[in-house]
Image (cartoon, rainbow, N blue to C red; front, side, top):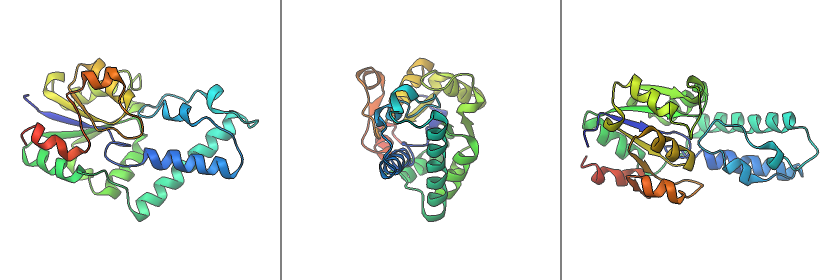
Length: 216
């Protein structure tokens, strides 16, 4: 592989944040006796697509109220992690250092809004590794559409065949496949589906396991 650009998802891939958001949401709703279907939340992990509220909201509260509660959960979690430590996934720094030593450009492609993404990247100490950041709000269609990855290649001046994507989610894997870009899956909450697993370059237990695979 003539690798010129390594593209990283953020939540669930570099940081163990998806689990934090989901767990905090479930805990808050349980404490307030609000019935919800968490699977509807898990189904949109990796995208900026809206939750199917008809399935998710099993309470008498209006959807707008639940959205506000969930947004507050995420904001509170981000504030806490930025102050007390971002949970970094195993092998992240080893892989970033190996790619940097090999002179490979790195970028972040995340569905998370820019200000929150930059806060987490800086707090975790990984922001300097990346040349640039592309968010879901900057493209027409969210993952599993390929837009964000294709835009990242454009900004990084790399052809799809010269890039490699690191993802954790099913939606991210499908977006990578649709973009025609090789990808590696390091699963987080949701295991890869058959289509994502079969098309992946590899499914690995940690990010550092990619180092020998790429001969870094």
